Length: 107
Length: 113
Image: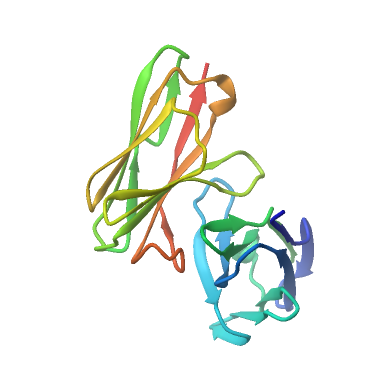
């Protein structure tokens, strides 16, 4: 079957760094995306990795290892507004979302 | 304009009603998507239109009927829905049908009584 695993919740302190992991098992693979969703809001695209390595966009970075079927989202200099749910999503013939990681940020 | 708009924001309907959800984008994107999202769950893909043609239907019940009148518009026609169909319905678009970077609309919160 197809599955994506990510932690259900992560807690971190404002100003710190947090890493959200995602492991996947899918029949095909073209890339790994990350989306942020605030309560009551719509998902917002953060990053996409098709090749191994690290992609950096401001305070957010995303990493992919295709041989390990693994990726992570790294958030630096955490701000209270980063409190949200984060979804990894794998693109094969279609798109499959993980169950989401709820990020709590403490002041 | 980097926005996907959806109307209405909220919809309450009975099981015998017929209603439609509307989605619009003016980014020149050629792929548009409908997702269903239940509370505290990930979005679930329902339909994909690529170049105005239905390319994916994720075994969605026939009480949901998509329509793509042109490259900027996407509709979802609803009839004879069940209470378990209550959810947030999200529309998204992307430049091509590759899912790489999808822009989501704010969604329609649907309640079926």
